[in-house]
Length: 420
Ligand code: AMP
Image (tube, rainbow, N blue to C red; front, side, top):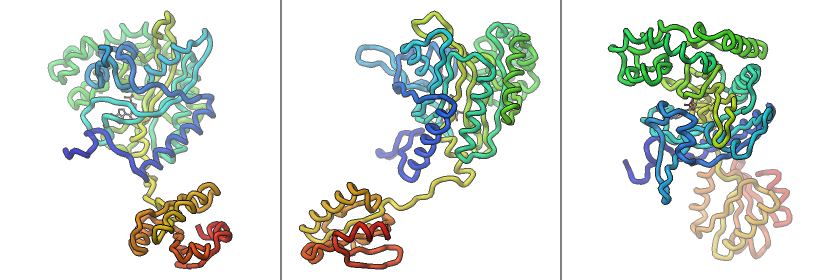
């Protein structure tokens, strides 16, 4: 690997890509507040236990994927692999009264030591929401509808909502027992992970990507059929809410999602433009015990991969094309002119004239400076040399029409308004 390349699974972002990222961020800031969510920013690293406690020690993320290190005081710290745990810690730290709700959204980088592949990165970005203290099924319906609204506002058509339920914690033993009974006779033919999961996390055997495991999982008992009436009723309301809101969805009986804290609703949105890693977003309802607080809080949330949202947009031809970097380019010929160019550029910016203004301080030839102006896509070039400075004028050139004029400094604003 060349010394200046970013590490595998990470990347540098330049324009015009940055414009696409801003579009995502701005859309999140536009859509989520309309549903009563406000932005929260939490640190990028936390005490390791914040993640282990929330995600469960048996999950892939905790077992294999966390970037964990010791600080100088010997504390174990971890770069956040997802957003929910930090958000919950922040809410616990602030305090949430009985019956009170917190609805927040966030976006930013997440870190997982996965094998890099298309759509799978080590530093990736998520935009997500959490509604904590909300235990109504209608909240789940609204949250999923908000996600589809966000995705549609990004111009992404063709996303599919996949929906399932994990029921209540009280259902867990019965479901686990039924799944174990089903998988036990097949275990010899399954992958190593699934052989281990039979005892440690049998639910995850339902969504293993290994073809042999998948084949066996297809005939496994359906979670929904094994749940108590309360859980089934909750799920029925979520489905009802989605139908009432006009959100199309498909039942996905083998969708369990990776993390232990989920109860009731789990969902993913997939998109065919993404290839093998086809999940745009995932989420669900969870119960989390807040650190330092005896209560268990219930919430609903999701996270969407920002790289994947952009890939989906790209698959639909919505990627931003490279455009001009500069609107007004100031060419200065000679030492006096360079200083005049510096001042003129400053004045234009203060007066908000000429858009993105760049002054050339290189003292190169007119031809060389003009070449740079062209390469940067400048629509207007302003030229000053000793002659212009002596007369108090600027030579102005409209790069699109090749129109050229000598304009006094007093008239420059009017010329720029017309041409830049
Ligand atoms: P998760 O927290 O694993 O449920 O992931 C939520 C969403 O984040 C997924 O649906 C993906 O869109 C995205 N995502 C998760 N892991 C990665 C990764 N390693 N690289 C890129 N995107 C990811």
